[in-house]
Every structure is written in structure tokens, then in C-alpha cells.
Length: 164
Length: 277
Image (cartoon, rainbow over all chains, first blue to last red; front, side, top):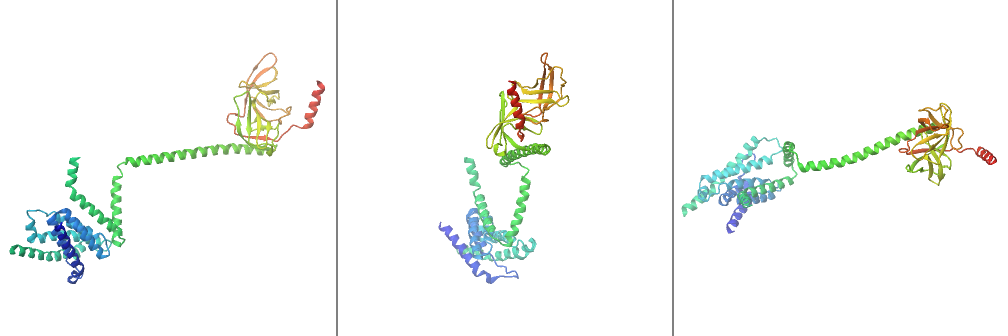
């Protein structure tokens, strides 16, 4: 139970940072920001599996939707799928390896690309943007930016590991 | 059951995932922005295409419902058709009666038969017109085809008429071709006969019989029927069987002719008969 509260706390903290501080570090003319919540979500997915990953994704996404005041359900959908995808990497033997190495960055990138594709494809429906535009302008930059930020927990984890 | 539960247990992750996806989609579709409208259009197209593909598979419950609905419609339409047929036949009958009404020299009252007896020796019909329509006892009842009978009882709104299939009704008639006279009466056993016609009289099968001017009750010239059988009954009279023009089984509307024999004639004939006695 405490473990779940810890994950909830991590996600809640990331959501607060995402909705407050992250907008100050946007890049490109399309105001691309990293998705910190997906990093926390991948962490939860790897640790606890598909069910917890998708449930955490849904809850986190719904909170983000509520704070966005616009497109209720869309972030919940994309984060649920991403959380479920991260659950595929839940493996007790490989858990440490996944979390403490560049593999974590790859997993974050995979989940982020899934999350961003679902989110932006829905988000830009009815506009003149074609899928390739969406992919180049929004999905890939966000994924790369998020992947860059996913280096931070890996570094922390490695340091902690070496400290032990 | 155990296997099923175990199978469902293995699918637990996917079931929960699907449920969350469905909830997310439901939340998304609660929005009413441009994107959702666009997605809805796409969804409708996709669902329409899928349904179109599945529509070749018959849905038993839907077919049953459709069948029931069609049966109900069929019953309604049958009722309507029956009513329309009835209305058409009534229209034809009324048209014929109207033509007759315009042709005849007498004033007539149109009535509908509301009661009929045809299986007794004294058969009558009840008509839905009476004294309020100036119908009086003794008035002839006819149709556009010919003679039906005579009014024998009246009330305010109804009247009863003896018909030709009544032993008490005797009609003075004549052969339209040869002008031979006779009395038309029902024998009570299913045949209408022309009586009092001598053996030598010129009456042939197919001859038209009409009311005679000798009749006190009916104006002359009303068609009654035609001769179907003509043979010698005994040494004196012919046995003439008559087929009426009016079909008493099917007749529905009649006219009452506003005709009464003249009182002067009645009085004279009465006086003469009393003197003769």
C-alpha cells in the first residue's frame, strides 16, 4: 500500500511540475515541452506491470485533462495506452537493468511516442495538418525532449546504485 | 467454468485496459469541440461501413420483430382493403339505385334492410324508414332490379314488408310479351309460381313477368322475374315457375314507392263485392 502511495506521490509531484514549471522551458515555434508525467508513468509500469501502469496512466491523464480545461479524456486515453505499454517491460529479473540504464530512455521514448501520437493525432483532427506534419512538428520533438529528461532519473539511479 | 475463469483471469490486464480506454473515449465524446465533431464523423463512417458489412448476416430477433410488425401491418391492410371493397360495392349499389330513383315516375323513400327472415313460410324484411319518412302500410317495396314486396306494418322510424317469399303476398302479374295474366305467389316450399294461367295460354320459358294494371297494391310494369319452367299442371292450368329478379339473399337497400291504390277504386270494388254476395 505504501508503495502505491509512493507512486501516486511521484506522479502527483510530476503533474504539478508539468502544469507549472515546464511551460518555462518550451522549445521551437510550436512550444514543445517535455512530458515529465510519462517518465514517472514508465517507472510505475516497469515496477508494477500493465494493470497498475494503465490505471496510473488513466488517473494521471485525467488529472492533466482536468487542469487543461479543454479536451477532457484525451490525455487519459493517451496516458492509459502509454502506461499499459510500459507494463510490457515489467520483469522482476530485468527491472533493475531497465531502470538504471539507457534502456529506460528507450522505453520512455517508445511510450512517449505512443502517448504523443495518440494525443496529437486526436488533438489535430479537423485541422489542415496531415499525419506527417503532426509527427514532425509535435510527436517527435516532444518524444526527444522527454527522452532527454528521462536521462535525469537514470543518472540518479546509477549514482544511488554506486553509492550502495 | 473453472477454465473460463482462469482464461478470464489471464485476460484481466486486457479487460481493465479496455475498460479504461472505453471510459476515456466516453469522456472524450462528452466534449463538443471541432476535433470531436470530426472524430464523430469518422466514427459514424467506420461504424456504418462495419454495420453494412454485417447487415448480410440475418438477425433472428430483428427478423422476428420485423415479421410481427409486417403481420400487424398485413392485418391492418386487409381490414382496410375489406372496408374499401365494401365501400366500392355499396357505391355501385347506391349508384344503381340513384339511377333508378331518377328514372322512376313515383316518389320514393330509400331504406336499408336491417332485419330479414328467409327460412319461414311467411318471410319479411325490416327497413330503417317508417312513418316519419311518409311510409305507409300497403306501399310497394322495390329495388332497381324489380319487386321486393309490400309494407305491412310501420312505426315512426321502421317498417316491415312482406316479400315475395311470403305465402300471404299475392301479386297480380302479366307476361310482358304475350300479355297473359296470372297471380304470382310463393308456394312456401322454395318456388315462386305464376298461378291461374290456362293450359292454352302463350307463356314461354324466359318470358319477363311484370306487375299487372289489375293490381290494387302495385303500379303496373314493375319487373318481377322470368319464367324458368313451363309445363302443364293438370288439364286446366299451367305450372309456371318463376325466378325473381331480386336476390333476397343479398339485397341490402330498397325503395319504398309512395304509391297507394286510389280510394275511389277501392270503394267501388268493395261495394261490388258486397252486392255480389
